[in-house]
Image (tube, rainbow, N blue to C red; front, side, top):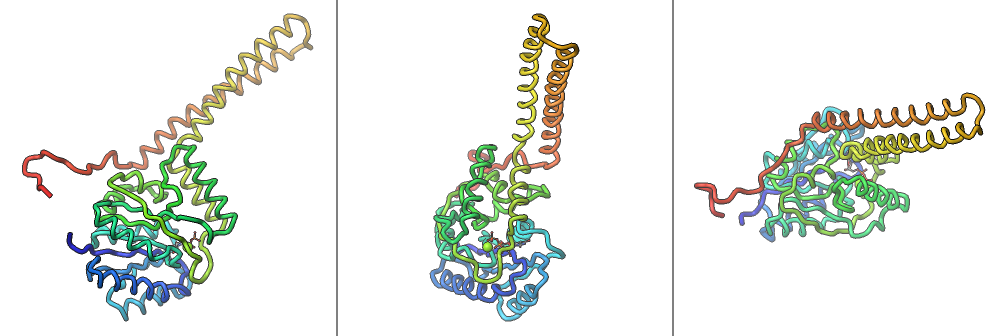
Length: 322
Ligand code: UDP
Ligand code: MG
């Protein structure tokens, strides 16, 4: 197999304190891989500046000036980690054989890269970096991540457990990712939808090199909420289920109220009020759930997700035998 041209894709937001060291370490890794004949000399390190407000872009410019394996992409304004990463992957999808995405703070231990390249050589097209342990995280982050994965599982969203955005994607996988035209990009949910031959490589996630996490609680919550609402209509189904439940409960309560009325144990107007409240509440909740079902359908239609991807065709006349 020919040596693959690998593009390392790193989204950067206000990372001027890390970038030089990140580049040095990644460059050292590239040199070692080159020496071992595992990657092509045309491989590059792609920094995507996500509208940083500090000197990130100046640092990227300087790195590009002094090294010929650096590409800098400057986004016009801050669009968030997922969109910045998507932009980098779309660029890499055109130029490279495969991309390896990771955080600019180099939290993802670079030893994972060897595993990625080896598995890619074995024919895997999507390789997820999975965190072996979360020792470097705060207790809160560990707990909230566990809750999140558990909740997503209950909602029926197919996520790779403990896999963040450190992964290798082949050219074909990146190009198929480009077919997803939705605005709310939640890559951890979309990438597994692509299918293709995939596997995982375990690694240790370290503390960030410098600076602070760009995911404060508010952003983390909105990220999780995006993940839930972009992938599941189960919350809407829950409304419908509650509606049906209340409706049947109202029937039982009506029987109870009528018995009390028949045995003369009520004050004037009580039966009518109780029956109306429960029946109307049941019908209303059920109707909202039903309308929600249709809104859910409209929502999935507007995303225009691709219906299928062909992994291979065999037996077709003239198909190349590999
Ligand atoms: N990032 C980005 N745009 C944003 C926020 C973050 O490009 O609006 C980048 C950031 O520079 C880093 C990666 O996304 O390379 C992950 O962010 P961070 O390391 O702060 O998240 P954490 O590892 O703390 O979850
Ligand atoms: Mg990080």
